[in-house]
Image (cartoon, rainbow, N blue to C red; front, side, top):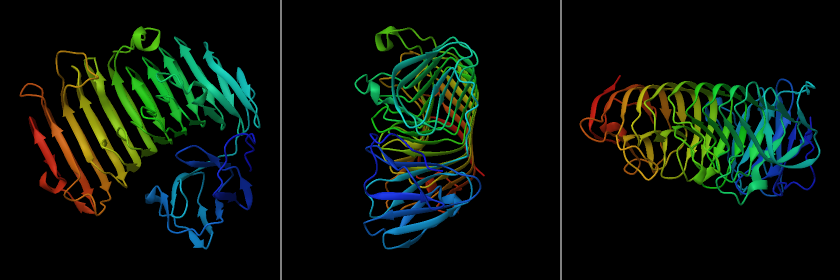
Length: 429
């Protein structure tokens, strides 16, 4: 039940957490507490504090969970192995609760990091068929790399801590290039210096139940760069930049010390059953800006809970700054609990991140069964934007199908505070 992490790892000093009456570790970053726990079936979660506790918002709100609060104690039932975000009045940082299934090491990993210890690995490189298992209670400080490999695995319920590379601002915590048949499962990731997972020119990738807390600007969660046949599911990502981003570009030696050729078409990508928490930088869901390829197509974001977008980014965004045609994109069954500046931002544009002279297009975008909560601060301030570049580089065929803003079905651009330019065939069903 209890996850025993090294005593040297920072702990919460405001709260204690108990699962089925057993205390679990509550670890700390600068922006959040997090409490991993393993159990079978339902669990009773109890939070204790020396301070008086106020209202607790348990996200995803869609689950309908509420806590009984009495003084400095709060308690509620967790109906299964859920990953939750708790905003607790009276506590300075949010709490992430990671309800894991009981896990047993399968004995097959190339690199095995046992629980209860901290490992200073620096940079670990995986070769064909190799794997890393980070056991619950283990803290692995460093990063993981793999180039041109097949069948690698990164798994376990322990912690990959990117702070080993704190002063290397371009360093990706997990960087996989030209890899196929990849599995990344269950691990927690914190303290990145930059992007947390970068997939470049990869195929047949499955990312499942990853938990991230990124705090620096540019702490993207998962960047899919020039990849195809990618499945991301059951993740909870807290990032101070894009939570999931789809891109296509070549990463040159000037930036990285090596050439990564990933300016390739992106297709067959499915992101489902995830929870995103966005800080003050970036977007919750992003396609762009760097798209130096011909097409990005057949991408679906399905059954997503967006807890917050606090900055000047958008909840749902497509930024075509290079020549790519972005088409056949679906946003479906997405619930947005809080946004600040922009709700939707679909644009063909030019920016500091782009290199192509030719501009692209955005075609055939579907937003279906979208539910957006509206705060008192949104009306009259928050907007949506859909804009092409010119008459030859349009945004066209955008369908809003059962898009609900504050429980009201949106039937027009005005109801959405939607500003448009160089568009064709925007429909509300």
